[in-house]
Image 1 (cartoon, rainbow, N blue to C red):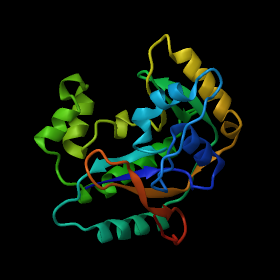
Image 2 (cartoon, helix red, strand yellow):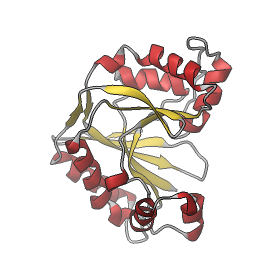
Image 3 (spheres, rainbow, N blue to C red):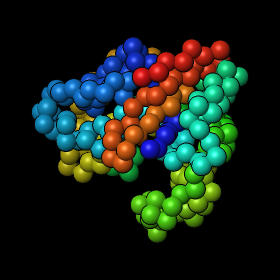
Image 4 (cartoon, rainbow, N blue to C red):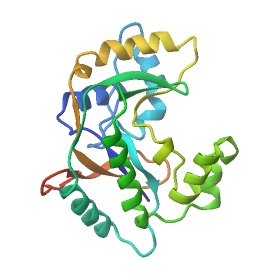
Length: 235
């Protein structure tokens, strides 16, 4: 079993609903849903391009998937999330935009947000005690030879290459697309998300996801609101 600490909008938020329809799965529930054609993309093409992102659900990674340390418990992790969330203020992203990163499409902030980066850094540090060390096999799955020195150092020290100076807030919408496929995929994403991307996005909670067995879809386990005494919602 693995856990992950993500940000994802509340289930009833328009952005979350549109993303769940696009990906064909709502991480707050167990069921997948049929994807639909969007723009010039057929339903089959949408399903193909979203397959790799579907298992994880709509999110941004704050603390990447980890096995629980042998001296920690799920209850302690959830209690720590409550404590952290209660004293951590909401960070608002003025606007998300569609971007292509290393071939895959994602929603990213329109400009730099130092407060958002500091928030992400704090999550990585504060919850590292709950993470079991990576096994050799887990390190190898990250293709360490392809990582930059800072990324490899982060992988070894923090369990994930893309933290601190290499962190970039992004909410993945697709797998990697070729240069031939990208324009049609970009047009479909733009048309589907255009309305909701005009609104600010409050990063207002930490959400604990769980992968119950290797290869299983990541599901919401608990949702911890920031900046006030949280009301825990358990899937």
